[in-house]
Length: 136
Image (tube, rainbow, N blue to C red; front, top):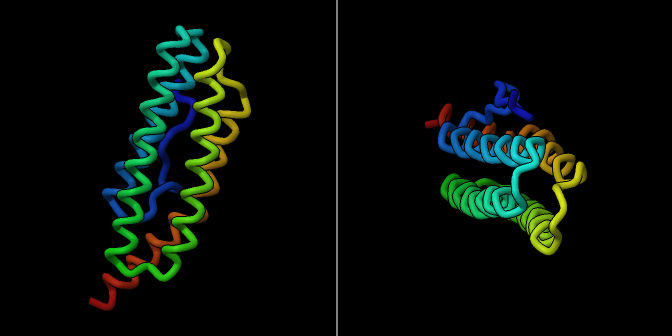
């Protein structure tokens, strides 16, 4: 059973970004499942590293998209991305330096990111892009 399921509340109305969000959720589910099954530190680290790399790629893609539509809150959104990346990278570094398992704090952070960021922040550029399509 997945740790987190994609659902319509995560649909921001931009298909390419929705698809990338689904990849992120899949990677988070893999990370959770590996942790639950007590996979090796190396296996979990590889998945966590893949998640971090994909997150960097996704945020760059998202920022490129926001620039392409001249999203007025782009700079603020970019700052939020920087903060999330710093937090994610800190969790990854901490895990890399230990031989332990991922803490609930990591999964709480990931769940907050999905719920608050996608539903509360990303939806804004999705809604903005819809207004552009209507006026075109």
